[in-house]
Length: 486
Image (tube, rainbow, N blue to C red; front, top):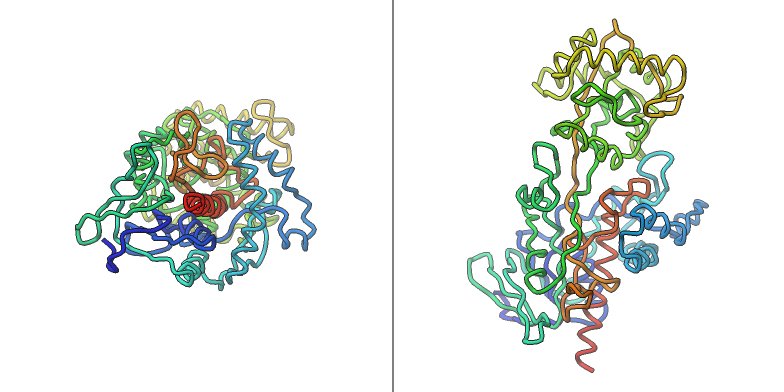
């Protein structure tokens, strides 16, 4: 096991991503001796700290006179899930969020701005200055200064327990294949979920990776910590993928579509494989809501259609929906970008000279698509969409006889959320809701805040929850150790 021969620690943290490092520093600052076990060969996790995080009532928001309060935010998050999420945990998260920004700032992380994911959403995303060190790098440096020990290439295989069911340590396999054991008073599970396992994604969420879900599949994220915690008696929590609507790889990017193809991120006509409309296309502003609508369709796909004159309107006026921190506001060589995608054999971007030709390329019945386009154009001309009730300002007819463009959208995913039930102190709980002594969870392994749909309206939430739940779990683990000493 560890090369220094030590096999004991007050707190063992499994995983060294956002949640794991936050838990590590929090526990060490509370006076605990901490050992971090990371199964890969590097520290920092899959997203290397992220681009920023959600918080409310921060100094930066006050300086910009952003009026959003903790009370309003708590209720918005709870109403978003119709009160299906744990209100006590949501409250703990919201209440601590501003302090976490200050905590990271005190260590040297620089936040340059506070923005919304898209214009019109709440400005909650505290954007890390691009020249600032990665947040996980800053936390690792702080942890090492506090005497934390790190061991990479060490995969936990089981949690050890005593006769009363309390977690007392970890056993596993080191990089050289040797087995190891660590005695600990507390263990924090922060292993990042199961977003890298197509098998677990299908088992827990029903999505089929590469078919109706195109996610960032970090191969190291295989649900290890969730399995360990459940084997030790932890109750399961609901699981989901953090989804958004996107073009399948490789043409995804910020918001699920690369900026060069931003005209496909707008409120244009969307049909399913039957040639039918199925959504108010202005929902494309919110990638999570749009992914829900797309997932319901045959094959889990939707086809966006626009004509050259609509793209010309965007060139003159700018796009309807703009993403924060994205400097491009209107199409630039859109037809050339479409040509490039088609030339490279990308099957999900199409171009045609008529509705019938487009239908043939998309595998849609041409009569059905023609009827839909005619009905949609009639709504555009009258200014009233009686089918999907899209706001009139977004109603622009698809003019036949002009070049038509289409893009096939699917559901994308940043990673998994949930798996281990915890309380508001991030203590893992058993099926009765009682805390399991010595076992704590943080980050994506326990994130059950969104009720199945990520709230892009208040962006930065999943990364922020990882840091905040990590802080809570680390502090709780250290306090549990202290209580055992008393």
